[in-house]
Length: 103
Image (tube, rainbow, N blue to C red):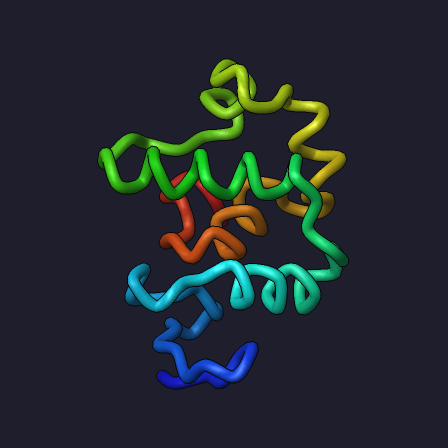
């Protein structure tokens, strides 16, 4: 399905995750963050978002545990940055598919 966000028409699935990662940009990330109740994205948020995009491009499995061990952010910081579903929300903001382990 199509959705207009930050002045861009993007393709999303029924849960609002981008289905074409090439349509992502930082303006879209900021708009999704606002929709998800995150507010303004800080450098710490963007560090997580960029890491997720890099790992997704490599085909790596994304989990909260692997994020905590990555050195990018601790598990507690991940929960603080993206409350109410840290991996789910950060993945949506990063424009990548919802990780398999997220319900």
